[in-house]
Image (tube, rainbow, N blue to C red):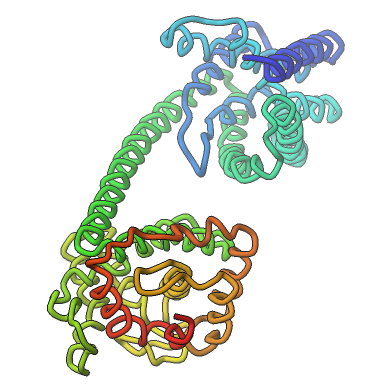
Length: 455
């Protein structure tokens, strides 16, 4: 550890040692524990520190199963010290296995025991109640004090050491508190059993083993999910390369659309799964164009109605291609199919209108149009950001979802450079006539009603 982190961790550890020592010396012992019980509880706590599982965006432990019986079976003033010793004992094996036990690691573990101080104070104030129905209200108060004290002290420590804001800690802590709240009744049941026969506390061991098995299985499955996610992402980028190899503009344009799509999704507050799907759809919304015959794509003159109908099947072809890949990409195929549906129902291929169109498809459609207008092509310069936004506003409520237009307006206002993406594309004179005819005759008119005026 360096700098503020070292000062914060050591400061928390030293302060805790002082508080725990004061509680151990001055608090009323109650005389309801012996050395064997104390050692057993510390060892069980050490084992529980090694049983954790991934949940939400962090880890949750099983120590609450032992901590609650500690409150009832040990003098309350000794509980913080017992928790700290258990943390250190549980961490030693892992540290030694990873290459040594550094003093700073011990300091970090000791500081983690701060959460036990507030509930211990509650039990001292309650006269150290024994396990039974009358103790339940005090246990509830102690658990709430545990959560509040743990969050406040951790927030101060992490903000001082690493500059982590309280808002970044709130969501992980909610998961941890939820797990501890669910484990608390089980810990209380163990304390009730141990009140008549202290050896009953050993019944926590099979439960810890079971949680450990489930935790390892969950970790293994999460690892497989991550590997599968990487495989899907690799497939998406491979398909994106295929689009770009088939047509440079379409491929580069699709990549540029993704950044704006993700920024819009963040501002809309879409969840992580929707955001991932939006990223894939943004990159693959034109994948079906590789199935359109080059004789139509490169036709030197305007398309006739039959040819235009073929061009408009590229969303259906995109869905079919992704369904053949299967898995997650098959699931986003229907979103790709809807990426040219209009808010007023005059889009294609299904004539969906309003909120019948998936939100991701509405976002991609609007971002697609904005990027097309603000990108320089060989046959026309890029229009200004202001003109492109004005065009989106003119067509809000007819071509585009008005809410999505407002979101893109806000995204561009906050980060115009990131929203536009590549401003230029390679200009090859021999390709210019073909590109000009393709855009004007094939894609320009049905996608952007006023693009010809802007060009």
